[in-house]
Length: 240
Image (cartoon, rainbow, N blue to C red):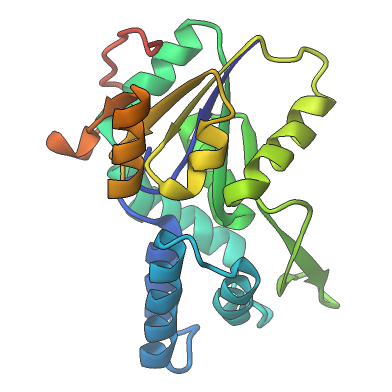
């Protein structure tokens, strides 16, 4: 089995799904103090890109609006993905995913974003396997799922990615003979250094420098228009 791993935010997707979801929650009226919420979210966003984010604190804050019953979170996520995220998938990303499928590779989407966002995005992309932050859920008297603000399992973030991936691969009957990983972020360096074929996509300055020194393949998907549909695939090989 050949395994192709893909980061989501700023790699396959032009932007950050969590940031856009925060704006969506504000538009739906789920956030009481939008100004304070967005200021804190921006601080945490900067901490993430500096490799200093405490994910537990971020989850507690951004999941708080989803604790109220009756907000129809799952349906809202589905609508949000279709209207706000699918149009922002890089056209080159569709082609890359299809090339790996044609090569017979197993696709896995790995993200430090939360499962309730990543799973439906993966479904839209046709990616069966997902590794994201799993959220704790409690059920109300009418079985309305509500997020507690906590998480479960191993965080798919930074140095914990290798452990998370090993947990998934360890359950597979067919251990991968070759692994490729596409990412934009310095936060993913531990996993990029772990796989057989690291690929820097729209890399941040730190990752760009490491990729240059190490001779890793680099893809700059922001040099072309960002929007596309899965029907406009190049069919070119995705392998290095």
